[in-house]
Length: 591
Image (tube, rainbow, N blue to C red):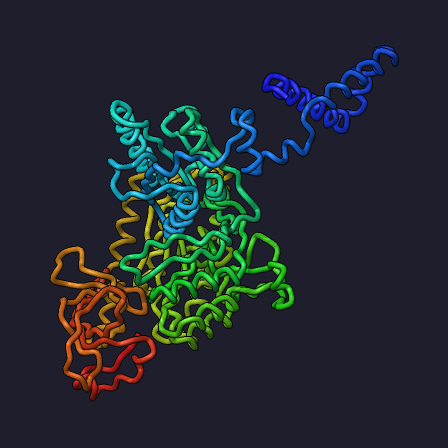
């Protein structure tokens, strides 16, 4: 069969298929239109159609195209089908990651997929053939940063066209889904768009882009978790890593765009998570952070877990949801239990949780397991019950404070952090004062504070008025930051005199003469670079390197960090064996 007859037969096959579908979907209309002519003429047309179809390719011919050996022997199909892009083996991709830890994890997943497709990675922009921006759209400022960067890259692309293959620019993640029309059609700043659930399609999209087309896939999925994609972890000196355990969010807070850019909540099978954490442990990673938009609502309902059904989800007392209670499968406590048993000398953290998903079983597990960090991120967003109701958070100020009290009762010495939004729709001065009083009453070690930025598609965008003036938002934000710093300084001052177990991250940003790391409560600790003993009884000194556990005596503190001097090399397993006499009268060790 020559190429022209193949092309003609393919068009005929497509017409016949469309006709059959039309008849199924629009039966009466089809009958009136096609059967209004005489039965003899109609039968004649059917005979002709059957004759033409018989001489064309069969359905099996189209299936065979996916077989590489068949494709190699049938060059006539090259024009019609996209296969593996051989040019990818000589192309370099450059990533820029913006926003939350989830985007860091997404970058590792996208790179894993492109690496298998034959791309190599560069960390130098001038060397890149493809630039991919992993984006965030949680706030207007984050989006504006991306817009500015895209304009710069577009001008760079125009200059590159003069001396090398055209640079391809792609936008991945939340902004790709939320602003697809503006990015691809109106502004024409990018060649490729891939939403959070479309990273598997990146090789095909880039192949189309290299062929001169603009390509996009921003479809959201109810199932995609990338469970079978092993991310290429690029951790700082190999000491810590992020592991995604679930994607999407069902909470539908009125200010939040996440459910619209990342889709419905779905959890990754526990078995694949355990496998990834075990692999990281084998590689010497000392700290793993479990990631999710609502990480502690994790619920693995995969087939193999149904026999381990735990029943309904248990919420924190006084909290409620906008969705139906989840049932069956393994919950977050089950996963945390399994992950923490993999390596007793590996720290386990998790973010970002929702306050509603802290039943007592999770809190008791955190207290019992030495390697689960005694630090909880507890996003409050506001200290006013009225504003919390408008935000659709599912709790009151009183319920939140009761949860804080319960956490501190079960986990003594726990470190708390939080998120706050000021200037939300309808927020009064009294509401603002209630938020300031909550900051003082709880006392957080860390906080993430922002002025409200309305996002399209959200409940607030459709139902509420962004009625707090920008100058008022800014003034309230400044007051929030001031009170937070005052209280965080007080909380951190309590560490002075204690010996903190610190996981070393590397050199301090300010000077190469100092090192920094984080304690169990995730507070930054800075100390002079020096050699240390491995054991109290031995005089041999060993250099400090990233990934080491050290005991550091804290001598000063502020709202952002702790300062001290290193005492000795240690580990999660050894820390309770160090007594004051071993530390030459140093204070008792704490978390």
